Image: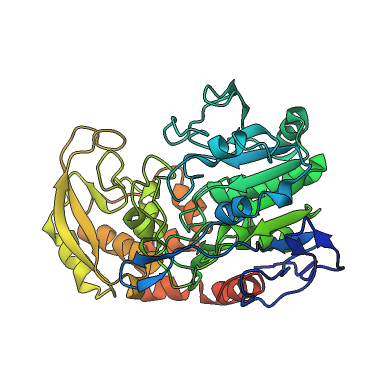
Length: 447
């Protein structure tokens, strides 16, 4: 893996919109609320607001502590000073909500302090009406009258042309991520940053939690030979970063021409926080990510999209239920015998209402994560592939080798085909992962 260290530290001083400065800050992100700190690549700043933290709220398993405040919460509490005098457009979807579940577009549109003139919708659309692989197209939003532009599967100059045609000078990004390299919203972020740079636009990222914590990066690192919309650049399969941290990394390491970038950090978020501890409402970021429990397993079990097994789409537990016709109790027994930390496997039978095996009863497993802090989703996904192949003679990869796009290499597929066990497959990516972890560390904003 080869990662550029270009522009690791920002240069210069100068106040930016009274919310932040361009400069250098501790990667630990220890600055208290109300101070300013900058970090990241060329042209990048980190915005801190001066708003007082909200009252404490209970977080499951963590006792009582201050509720996490998102980047938008802090931006709005500060009177939108970062956007003052700007003509702004926002890349968002149904997850762009306040703590009381009002959509931020509706809130900003109604606030005379903000000149919001356009919305840019990703996969599934701005209002979330489209299924996987779909979007809402170009239309005028009935609630606000704002022009909504479709960014899905658009990148480079065509996307830059959309930003230019919209008339905005600042592109804002606020979407809840799921923590996995192949969850496409982070590549919408990347593509929009590239396009904003081409179009000469300013870029602002409003941060939200990584729902499965930001403790560690896990899994194989993408080989650029396998770059697609489910992985543009060499990051780990479970990246362990927030969207603002990823934006800083993208700008410093991957963009040929860094975009003028500012990020608004959260307050109250810790790297070991699961989403249930944040006090924030969970809004499904896509139709098959209904709960934060789905996100917990997704970075491992989404690999089954690259096989002939159902990944649970068309059930109430997508990515927690896996199976196919002809699988019986032997798979659950083999998976439990792997001794994986934090998870048990139940023999399960289900009939998907759409997608693979629609309307047919299949057998398989359901994952039950009982100790999230010990659970490794990527190792678990590999172990399930290994045991599925060994316990069911019908196992097959998708003919297009989609598994290689998901894992970012051929090694996982070829090693499993050759009979490798879980430890051997996981060990094959350790050197690349260690290199990515060193790069990643430079762009972390929170303790």
